[in-house]
Image (tube, rainbow, N blue to C red):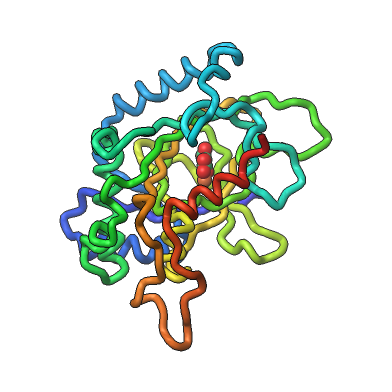
Amino acid sequence: MRESIQLPIIDLTSPDPISTARAIRQACVDVGFFYLINHGVDEKLFKEVLEQSKNFFSLPLEDKMKLVRRNHRGYTPLYAEKLDTSSTTQGDSKESFYIGSLEGKSVVSKLNQWPAEGIRLISLIALALDLDEDFFHKAGACDSPNGFLRLLHYPGELQLSEQVVYGASAHSDYGMLTLLATDGVGGLQVCREKFNRPQIWEDVHHLSGAFIVNIGDMMERWTNCLFRSTLHRVMPTGQERYSMAFFLDPNPDCMVECLKSCCSDSSPPRYPPIRAGEYLEERLKVTYVS
Ligand SMILES: O=C(O)CCC(=O)C(=O)O
Ligand SMILES: [Fe+2]
C-alpha cells in the first residue's frame, strides 16, 4: 500500500503570530510542506480561474502555440519541460501557462491577491526563523517580488510509451515559497529523504479550500538547509487534473545568503551568496527540453 502524509495545517487568521510562527517552523524543518487555511483568497475567484484555465487548455494546439513561452511567460506544451533533469525519461506529461508581469515595478505591484497573502506568510516565516518580521522585506526580497502564477493541466490519458511518464517528475521548487491549489484530483507526492534508497514517496491529500504551501530552494539556501525544500512530483492517475501554482520568488536583485542565525563555526554556510534573478535563470534554463 502507498503511504500518505498528514501535513501540518497553518491557519493564517490565527490571532497569535508567535504560535503560528512556531508551527510554521516545525512544518518547514520537518517536511517543508504545509496546508494553509483561511488564506483570504476568495473561493469564487479560485473557481473562476480554474474555469478559465480549462477553457484555455481546451483550445486547439495551434492557438495555444501562438502564446508559446517567452521570457518565462506564456504556454508550454506537453513534454516541453523535464523537472527531473537527472532522469532519462521523456519530458513531463503536462501543459502549462505562465502568467506574470513582463514589465516594470508598477505592474508587478498590481498583481492579484496572492502576493499579499504570500507576503504575510513571509513575515511569519521571518518570525519562525527568530528574525524581525520585516527581515525579508528589508533584505529586498519583497520589494517588487518576482511572483508568477502557473496554470497546469495534466491530461488523463497518456501517450503509449515504453518509458515511465510523470505528470511532473521529481523536483524541488526554485524560489522562496510556492502556494499550490488543485482541482482535488490526486497525484501529488513528496519524498522527505531524497538521498535514501529506495526513495519513499508519500501521497499528499487534497484539503478542500486550503493551499498547499512549500519551501523552495532559495529559502533552503537562506536557512542553510534548516528549512527543507522537499522533493515532490505528480504521478499520473489516469484522471485529468488541473492545478495552479503561485511561485513567490525574491526580487531578482536580492542577494540570497546564509542567515547568520543558521550558521556557526561547526555548521558553515553550505552555499555561496547568489543573486536571486541569476539563480532562477540558471534553474529554469536546464528544465526545458526545447
Ligand atoms: O500540480 C501540482 O500539484 C504540482 C506542480 C508543481 O510541483 C510545480 O509546478 O512546481
Ligand atoms: Fe513543484
